[in-house]
Image (cartoon, rainbow, N blue to C red; front, side, top):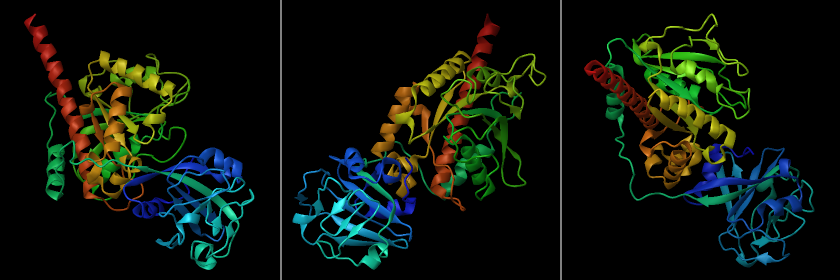
Length: 444
């Protein structure tokens, strides 16, 4: 279910409630404008925020700490309030008699006092009676338009803010410059390789292409979009692409190439084929190779690179995972990732996890990216990623891609650049291992 509340509206509502997140429980256009559907989804859930929308553009609702039920009785709640948006501003109306804060009516949606009820009588119509335990004007609340186009109910869930960050990050402009310079001046330890090749793998919509666009934006000095990215249920990337980053518009190529692949999908014959992964890792696939989910690349194909050298091969694999979706990752998708990890392990290639959309997963981080390592929620998500993908916590780095912004944000840049630095460190590990193997073979 997708929320109809905008990010800014959610942020404004949360500002009234403290460090919390809103979890969508009920959506009338999907579940039904009936009391039965509402109570099935929302009874015994608390606290909640109920929101109504009408064709006149009004967004209005109410908050209660008490769980909904069908007792037919009023429930005491001295923290209950109604609200409406006037532009970006939230107008708040506190309950005037807490004994009658919420009315638990069976054939209605959320029912506040005797003042405001959503789809009363199981019809998409608002019951409005200002002054009955909540003081507001009908014009201000809903513009006298009582016909609902949507009604949503959100559960209010707390977030955990840790006393101190569990990882040390230095923020500020100087650190940003330092990270950018480290990337610009990086040189692989193997003379035959001038650019590290990092393969991005992940489910559809996790943010692989968006990550390249975001890093490219940092070095360009403004938000840009070279790789195709966006929201879709199937992969927007259909080719194997190798993206070279540049230090500015006319700048030199940076010593890292990000390789983008088709998104992983749970179904057979859909998304990136696991067998194509081996060809990519070993350097057999050329840039712009067109993926065919039904048939992996054959070694007899004309475009197949038969004798790849070290600079053609992958030096680090990065799994891109959406922080909001790890808990609902389908079993078949998890099995695909496990099969890929086994292939990568056999080749001795270091593996990193890039955890994207951390701002959407936690309100603390949405308010300030610097809270990323003070968020107990983000730490729990990273621990779940570690357990489900079988990677150490030290191999997981969070990031926030640019998606709707027009201007760069220094703190976002630092997380993005730190992720690139980790990739380069893992590349060094790969080359060091190759060097050690070579030395042993020489001795023998």
